[in-house]
Amino acid sequence: MAATQANPQAPFEIKPSTFSGQTQFLNYIGGQWVPAKSGKTFQSLNPADPSDVIGVFPAAGPDDVNAAVAAAKTAYETWRLTPAPVRGEILFRAGQILIERKEELAREMTREMGKVLAEARGDVQEVIDMTFYAAGEGRRLFGQTVPSELQNKFAMSVRAPLGVVGLITPWNFPMAIPSWKLMPALICGNTCVLKPASDTPLLSHRLVEILEEAGIPKGVVNLVYGSGREVGEPLMAHKDVTLISFTGSTDVGRRVNEACAPTFKRVSLEMGGKNAILIMDDANLDLAVDGVLWGAFGTSGQRCTAASRVIVHKAVHAQVRDKLVKRIGELKLGYGLNPDVKVGPVINEASLKKILEYIEIGKAEGATLLAGGQRDTQAGPGWFVQPTLFDNVKSTMRVAQEEIFGPVTALIPVNDFKEAIEVANNIQFGLSTAIYTKNVNQAFTALRDLESGLCYVNAPTIGAEVHLPFGGMKDTGNGHRDAGSTSLDVFSEWKSLYVDYSDKLQRAQIDH
Image (cartoon, rainbow, N blue to C red):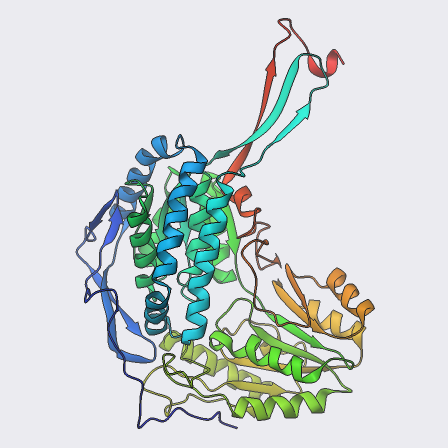
């Protein structure tokens, strides 16, 4: 069943950047905007209309990475000694600029990444929230003071920055995720080399522009565009980079971990998900269906927290199924600046092909296709996939086990609450899970037993807030977290300090 289409006779006008008419962009190294040393470039395209070129960006290589790391290393000696509250004041100014330009940034994001305008505004708001949150941490980089076990001895712990950190970010949240990494790293006193995804370079350019305008010193933030092979791998291998913070797929994250192992780099990995919404027989079904539509098809399903499984009690399975089919049929596809559009394109042609291949896999496995299932050519010339719903999915099917990263979700009927928890946990990932129920005992049991870093009750699997840790269990990550105060642990290390003012030798446990 196809979703309702945007009117192809009245496409929404695609306008160039509201910031300027700039179409040629440069790397940012040592406080200067510079081309790639090779002279090579690549284009960023509008996924709703690939004939619309967002801009031309430098295709950097190892020489550019070396220059960026060298600039960051030089700047570190001054930046680490800049008082944290002063670092926070710079971030606060950046937050104020972001507020002023929120609408412009959101419109550029819709054009470059494809998410509908309301979601793009939310992405920018998350940057604002993260920037102000990190700015406040400049006056709250708390350590501990504890009583010593010996007389006339003072004991405390403090955070220390790591040095030069490498940040590798994805395209689906092209400003929010870079901010999750940049802002905590900067407030802790590190200097940064950012490698954004090649599908969405413009939004990282804007973020760095704003930090520059806010007064970030030269060399503290460096921006290098390019491929994983030409930029990411040299960054991982560089001897002067102390940490790599990566967000992306589990397969790539595994390679990042392996690449960093020989030099004992710290690695923070936030990777894939195969998230589930559990709908129990006592749930508010209309609310649950709202949650499934938003969780599964928001950002065209291109979120690591997207709800790609709907584990539903058999007693309400038919009702949920019928409600979802009706509501999916009302979703309008198209260019995200059109206010009537609810689902935008997927990011590129390779993603389109992968999603369509998984839909064929689902049909071959015996799942029942209830809605969507095809490329949508009426919504526009871009990479549009109809919101897709499978029914009668077994928990062992590939479409119930593997991350699709598109507007595809699967109904998995279960007999009871216990089976629902077992099915939810029977995957390699552990990022986000939600349960809809009015039974407080079931709700709290689910919060305890679900193997995921994020758990929601009567809300969908998407919607994390910046002041709580973000990340997952199992193959979703390696134990670190983005956002919240725990992000400070990623970008700093602890020093324990002892001051003995007894004027005599004291031997700790020996003298105790």
